[in-house]
Image (cartoon, rainbow, N blue to C red; front, side, top):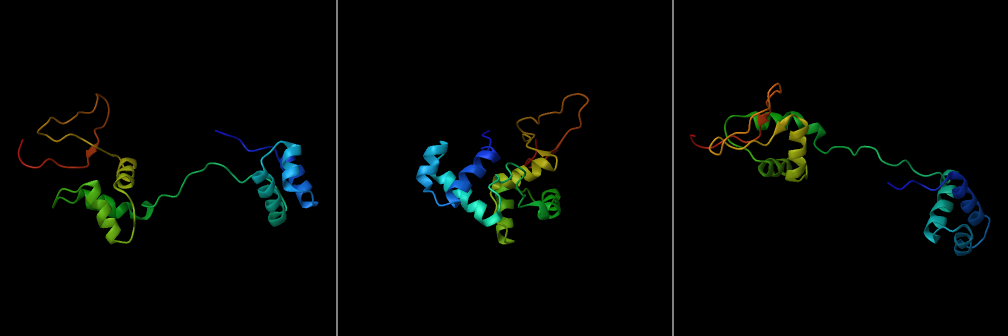
Amino acid sequence: MASPYSLDLRERVAAAVVSGQPCRKVAATFGVSVASAVKWSQRLRETGSAAAKPMGGKRPRKLADEVDWLLSRVNSEDETVTCRSLALELQERGIDVSHHAVWLQLRRSGYSFKKNTIRGRAKAPQGRQSTRAVETASGEA
């Protein structure tokens, strides 16, 4: 992963631009792009520092508040649910997510995809707890 330029370089470039020198000339002198020189000088004017913004971190999860509803819906025995149908139900509730986001939340909650009983259910290795199936098999085996 790329790392930000040093704070020393950022401050020297931004100070040169703020002092009135043209951005293109400053960028050529210090060997950085014109866009970087402009952004660093703007950040220096706005915040008083040309330091880089924090990198990385975790993105907030859209379904964090809906975990209880999602798990209760999956555990309901009245019908078989799929990730796509759950995504559509969530859209009706005002939460716009993809079926993949639903699957990721189920995966974080301990569910895994299991083959249905007709084709032969995958088993957990010895000494490991088996996971719950997301979908149930239709019909008799």
